[in-house]
Amino acid sequence: PWHESELLAAEKELLGIYLSGHPLGEFSRVFDRYGISTLKSILSLPDGAAILTGGVISDVRIKTTRLGEEMADIRIECMDGDIAAIVFPKAYRLFPGALKKDALVFIRGEVMRAEEAGAPRIKADEIHPLAEAYARLTERISIHVPATRAGDAELAKVRELIMRHPGPVPVAVCLEYPDGTKVFLDAAKNYSVCPDENLIREIERIVGETGVYVAARAPA
Image (cartoon, rainbow, N blue to C red; front, side):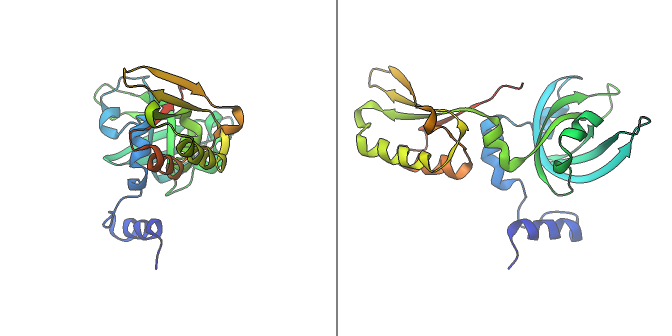
């Protein structure tokens, strides 16, 4: 049997559309958590506006400038349509491995509008695999636990879980008291994690679906 991603790629190649799903479907929570822009929201932004968006690279065309530097014109297929993006030489040198057809990526950059009525494009400054979104876009993970049930057993399960996912993202525990008071406790550095969707879901199984908050990192 084909892997889902292979099946979707074959559908797009043969039929021009996805029938059994969409490659971005598994990343829907990533888009929601980090406010990754859809095409609809990009179309309403002015020239020069900073954006974070993501999608499938549907086309890559490598060009050479007059100075002999390589750059690329690409098309990004979002959940609600597609848009052109330009990767100038500096960004091309930094992220050449990400520029592959059918790659799932997220992009930091800005809106480019040559004409007021024309379709906008994206000036891509950073291009990363969507699978790395949690690790690259997360500033901190906060685990919220009612103080009345913050028992040693529950916290021990969380501690054991995060120890299996070491990484650079700090973790904080928030104790929530009945009167509304919240006390944040920063975990030691050795409890920092490399987050992904599976880790978030596993923590949610322990503390509840509303008990995990992912703070997004501000653009550099």
